Image (cartoon, rainbow, N blue to C red; front, side):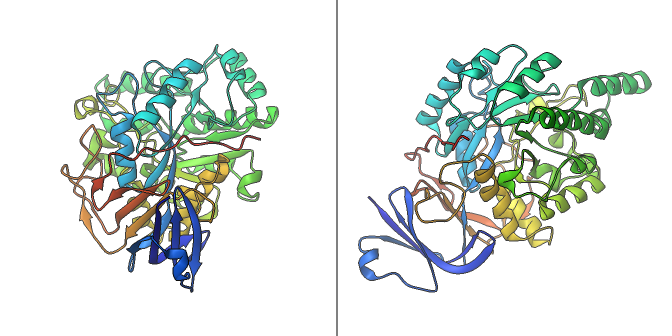
Length: 450
């Protein structure tokens, strides 16, 4: 087995930052050293990487991506978007089921696993989609291989709305696994569309998006999901929370591993606010919508205080032409996974939260929340999913260095002060100063189901 010794790095891990080194042996971490040099016999035959001046972090785990395969591969696919992921320091992803066909049968889910094994350079995992009528499929799922069920409580890309109360009661009561929800109240959204189109016509510009997919639509749906999960004692994970008001539904008194109700925030809701619509237009049209500066401030504070448990991307590429149109017709979603870690590190450098908190929310907490087997930490015996960051190598996002298949980013022309230098997946150097090792293949993520 190949050995690699990464020395003189600033290790940011488990709430601490210190100078140390890591020995990789094969696909796992053999040892972590602080204030000591391993015996030469231990290092015999090891490749040496001098990481002086660099930061060593556990690879990021993104619990919400839309890599568009199968059926929508003109936008992105598992191969292309996993390459963008490792270029951004993300070593594990959990892909969502609103593809074509939808991942709502075991056959469709198994096809995705096989495709991940064939083409992904990152570790891969796939949510199973819940519908109004597939409870029989859900009952036969292998919980050690699936992060959870995904339910759309508001319509979004893929038309997978679960809107029958009887179906929701059955899923929450019987699934016995984590239920991740897209929470926006469909009735409120439709009411808002009717109200604004009656006033201004159907050619509504992007400034109406947050008015239509409003705070009320988000909070009402999230609150209903919390009530249902609490009553039926289900594990609920609310995806891409976007409002200050929703923070009242979350708790930071319990340790993460004891929480039954958890929340995710996405990088775009932490970075952008509604005044950015004037500059970026449909490029920052997401569901749920980018909200106010006050909402963004509250979300950042909730990351700091642990009301929000993990940070992800909702990476959802569309072609530029698909992002054209008005508030009602332009596609919702955008590509983010290549730039999520550096964006979070920049927010940390601005004092929004600590670098240690970034690592917690993007690596440790996803591993704990989803009970992932031996990932998310720099620990002996864990898989060597690692990222080396250069904290003093500013770079500009442009079309030449964007790896998304759709070819654009909402961060274009932005100068990031931190840069991903090298990324390891299961001990293999998969990204090295701009170069992807096309021969590396990720590993299926396994879960410690309880």
